[in-house]
Image 1 (cartoon, one colour):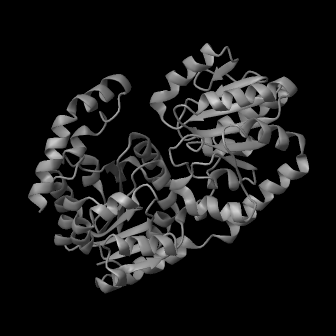
Image 2 (image 1 turned 120 degrees about the horizontal axis):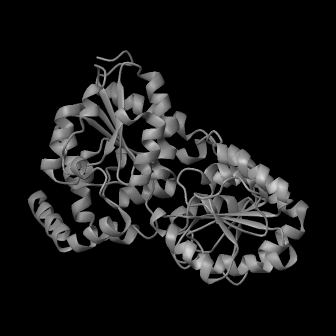
Image 3 (image 1 turned 180 degrees about the vertical axis):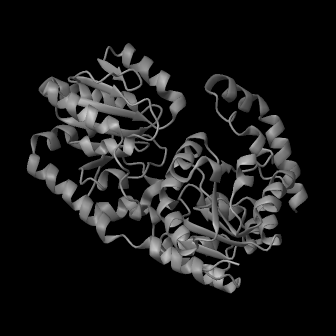
Length: 432
């Protein structure tokens, strides 16, 4: 089975090679860490201290943020173990290096035996922790054969993914036998994991690690921008984060209505993908919208326009400046993005009606009247409604913060489950 899968994966890579080359040439994507993806273990990982290794894999920024607290707790409980972190995306890599040190972070290898084995042989991990649902058949098989314990944490099966997983159950049921522990976010995820072939006795519910993510230390841009807004007497401030293709025009049209009544209003617009920064800047020019690019902004007063956040890693902290937050990927059918970051600051949150990827979080907040879910036609009206009603705006934000506080605790439950798994592997907190 595995050689057939590997052959099909190789064929797919070959057929799609022009796409990958185009992405490298146009956007610089996938160029970084190319050797690492093909199995070249970076020399910096060889400089790690002696002791057992715990390998944590987090695909992108969201997963890196989610496991940050977990990694800190693992390091506290296992001081003689060395924790290394792999990512798939460039943005996730940058954030992980910033948080965990460049010498501990690398790109996840492609799912071929020749690319995976060098890492397993070099790192010799005793525990591999995979965030969410990265079910790579060759990796899981080889990790299991290396005698590492394998855990999938913060696991969720989205509405979009479930039908495909069910169709491939005949394959997944064999692949998932190589995982020792699954920790689902919700009871629904536990059931879905069992439905797609995970051994039921290995599946538990630990909650969502993202509820435990602490707000980041504010970067300098927060105080600089706050000062720039105050000097200009700007307001209200609407932060639109993680926006996607076809969504910015809808948001900008709604913002035009806001500007008509509030000429000093400011929108902080943060596209989800860095390769779209130039595209969104061109859109702002075409629409004749007054705007500033974060990368070129020198601290001047800002009022009556859009700040294009063409930077990485600053959005979460900038929600603190918002009177209203809109979380993107939700006005168009892209599944939505995480609403926890603005909730940390007690900011009133608006999302579109396409939030399938975060159904449980949005559903929870909606049941607590802690988020507004709207369609494109309603968006301008809801912006104006919240801007004009301070009491309603503050109550919505307060309920968001309260809902978030009530959901904390997934990190401690996850650590307890991993400790139990390691004990089963005869590993003690003192190390080997």
